[in-house]
Image (cartoon, rainbow, N blue to C red; front, side, top):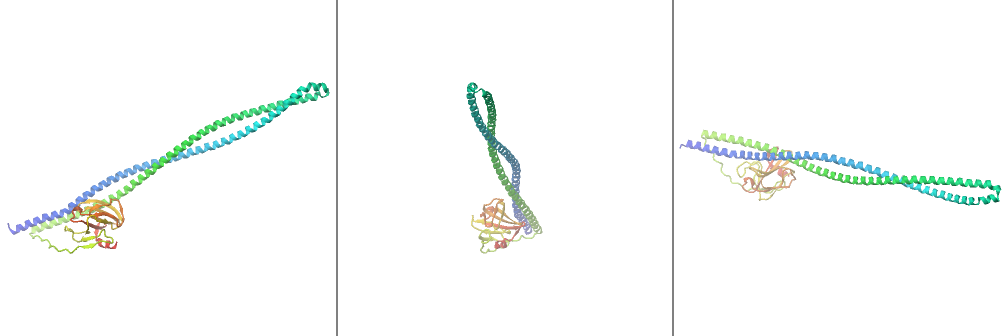
Length: 411
């Protein structure tokens, strides 16, 4: 086999290897994209369910509020009726007292009339028994005695008529009193019924008010959850957009590398030797201030990662389980495993700024959680194929990675 043929075969093999290495980021990005799309689909489904539940609770809250209003109005009507009954009872009591006073006065007057009648009867009886003797002894006073007897009989009839009238008035008062007593008894029964109805309505109103409060609380919970899910969905959409852009960029780089390799293989250009290994200096220690943790700087921004990739962030070595802290206030928008990053957590700080914490052992916060600067959000690990426990930290602004050193030094 000639040297030229061997060279062409070597370039063909190199081209295949280059294409394979270039395809790995694309596959990782595509896998991450599929994971994010599944996550987004789940979030959207839950968002729809929560929104549907919130609308249902809205309807229930409205119905419960209307029922509570109806109960309040019924309590008010019943209370007004109760007040009217109580006023009527008070009037009936006053009228009964007035009747009792009139009855006592009439009985007193009737007693006086009876005493006068008794005196007249006694006087008439005495005068009547002595009348024949007086006529025999004093014939000249017969006319006067006759007039006196007539006058006595007249007074007797007048007193008897007055007593009869008083008896009739007393009988009328007694009948009126019995009627009023019956009416008062009926009013007291109505008062008790109204009082019982008011108590029942008060209990019903309290129960409805409690139900409305519970529905309002559930509605607020659903509304809060819906907002959190909405933020999560928007964050995942942004993540998907970035992942798609990364996949497209990696695909373009793969095609370009494959084209260059094919061109070199076709032209017979010898394969380039890999650059000689450069002795690495002792890693720099970083941490303090606003850094997510303290440890050895294994790769700086724009440097070379242990696997040879260019770093868009910083890789900090530390013991497994070391707490990883948020570098600024924000909201967790992503927290789960992702190809190439392992367990990754993303915090949205607003104004287009986001921070990424990858290769973690444990994620301590859920999507939608609000975090403060210095809060522990994860722990150091080596997930995602990382060779040693370390944190990969990346800072992005408007979707583009930026050098975090200046940002971290200022915190």
